[in-house]
Length: 151
Image 1 (cartoon, one colour):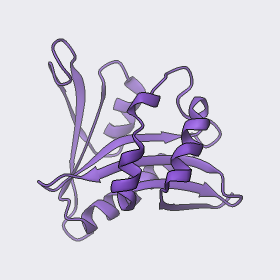
Image 2: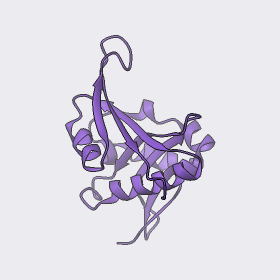
Image 3: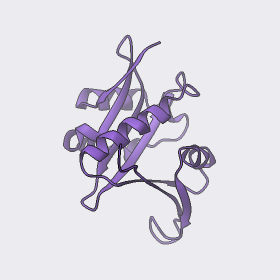
Image 4: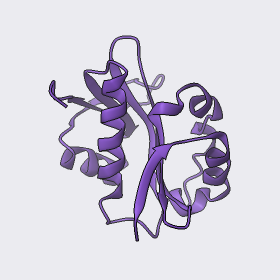
């Protein structure tokens, strides 16, 4: 099955939400999905499409004014896990973020999300737990990775 990674559009956002369970299982993360991100940062919000146009994964991110490519959400559909698609989405995001001046990447997750922590470590991110990152008593695992200067 071929896969093409392209910029996300509003219709893609609606398709992702309609298929939410296939990406996130029983975790309801719909409140974290902001259509404004796709509308305002479309060139760094990406979807991976199969040959039939189905969305198999996505990464919604943006570049901050200080040059950080922030990956807000990354998910692969249940039928695309273990294929390297998450790695491909991150690589495409890194390239897009660098085009917009990013010098580093950042992401966060809950401290209990061991799968995400392991994935980001395999991708070369440093991880540290930051207490109260998301409010009092809400520690988060924070990932950082410097982008290569020649990429």
